Length: 409
Image (cartoon, rainbow, N blue to C red; front, side):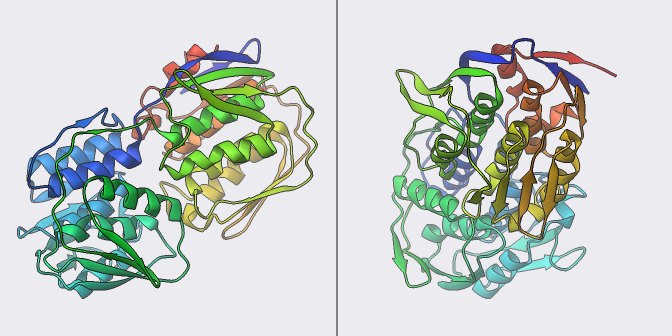
C-alpha cells in the first residue's frame, strides 16, 4: 500500500506519458499477420501489451493472457486464422468475462473453437483457417474489441470479410481508431449499411511509431481540474489523434474549465481561475468508457453534480467498475447513485482528512482515485502495482508534480 500527500495542492511540471496501449496491441496483431517484417517503435511497456507480444512471439499452444482482456479477444480472432490448435486461458477474473459473441461469430465463419470450461467464457481451444466465410454478423452492444478483433484479421482472409453489426455500436471511437491504423498498413475498408466491408489484401510492412496514450493523459486532466492551481505539459502528445480518448479535451474545457492547447513539445493544460458554476452536468460515455472513472473522480473531488451515462461495458471490465466507483467515491461523503449503465455524483463534499481506497485489481481505479490527494490531506491506495497493466511509470510521474508517495504497511 502507498500513501499520497501534496503539501501545496498546486501542480506544475512536464509529464512523460506511456505509449498508447490500444495502438500498440493493434499494431502487434498486424505485425504478426504481415508477411514482411517491420519494426514497431515506442511499443507500450504496459503489462497487457507485453503479454500479447510474448504470446505472439512464443508460437505456444497454451496461451495464458492473465488479466489482459484485449489480448484474449485479439488472440482469439488471430488464432482463428492459424492452422495450429491453441488453448487460450487467463486469470480467474478473465474466466468470468464473456467472449461468447466473438466465439459465435468466428464459428459462423468456419473456425473450430471449443470451450473447455463454462460455455461463453475462457478457456477455449482454437483451430482456424484462412479460408473462412466472408460475411459475419457480430453483437456490437457488448465490446468494441469483438469488432476490432474481426477487423484486424479480415485483410488476410482468402475472401476478405464483411462485418455486420447486431445492435447499438458502443465504443465506436475505438473501432474508428482500428480502421485508421489498418489503413495505414494498406488495408482497404469500405463502410456498408450496418457495418464494414474489408477486402482481401496484404498488410504492408511499414515501420510504425506508437504515439503517447490519451487514456493515460486523462489522469493529468483530472489532476489539473482538482488542483488549486495547475500548469502541466504532456510531452509529445499529439492534440489531434485517432485515439478516441482525445475527446477528453472538449469535456474538460467545457465542464471543468481547463485550457488545453498545443505546446512546442506536446499538450499544455492550464487551470482557469474562474469559479465553476454548472448544475447537474451530464455526459454519455458510450464511445469513450475508459474515461468514466477519471471523470467521476474529478466531479467527486470538486463536489459537483455530474451524471454519467453509457456505462454498460463497465460492469464486465477488470472489475464491476460501476459498483467499485460507488463504494470508493462515497468515502468522500458525497452521494453516488448508480444503475445498470449510469451513475450520478451528488454534492456536498464532506470535510475528510484521510482516505483509504481499494483498487479491485483495476489499474484505472488506482489511477483515477490517486489525484484526490489534492482535495484531502492524504490518500492511501491498496495494490498500487496494479497500474503496471497500462502505465508502469504512473507513480513516478506524479512525483514530478509534487506528490509525496510513501510505502506503508
